[in-house]
Image (tube, rainbow, N blue to C red; front, side):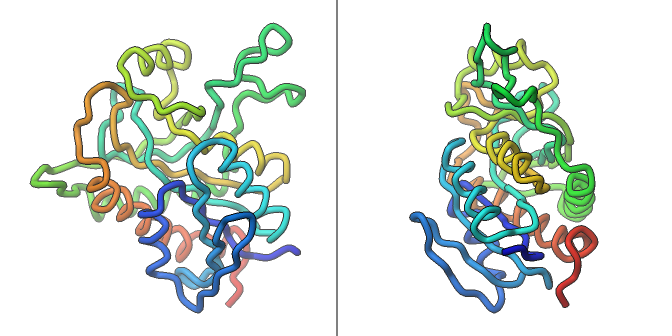
Length: 256
């Protein structure tokens, strides 16, 4: 089955809820322990699904969306830890490439390369990346500051490398090691590169959007649940809706 439906995946229930609240003409299909919410957002046919945390969870969900349901492509939205010095809490990163920082099959294969593929960095689909970037910059121009518990967070948009691994990076030592190994990495998370690998295998586009919730170090600078609800979920909702309304019809065709 092939459709013009866009899959929208989140790892956190709060972000999915913010988008699901906007879903029209919806119905839900349960498969492999996941609830796939079908409907319309911004005039575009979509399927929203919570994948859970980690690379296997993301890859399994992406495979179901592409192989079983035949979606046209996938947008992933979630939070991440900032790695690059200029990337701060509240900023938004759109991945133009994704890499699994915990993949290491040396000496048989170069570090970070997925064995037998010759690929270490999965480059985002150019058209989908540009469309998501356009939606992101538009929303941040309208909402450059979010308030969290009386603190103003000024948001800037960045595009670049996002890295993924099955570990929660929450120490200065770990984040420093990642910056040393991958100095162009903007952010670190736990799902995006696995989803990108599956989309590559299926020949389908994907785009990854991340709001920076922390600096991937020892300092818990914000109330994470509150940040998720008041900042990350709001940006995810508004950026994805903008992407679907203005950009997605150009990429997959308007279903009318």
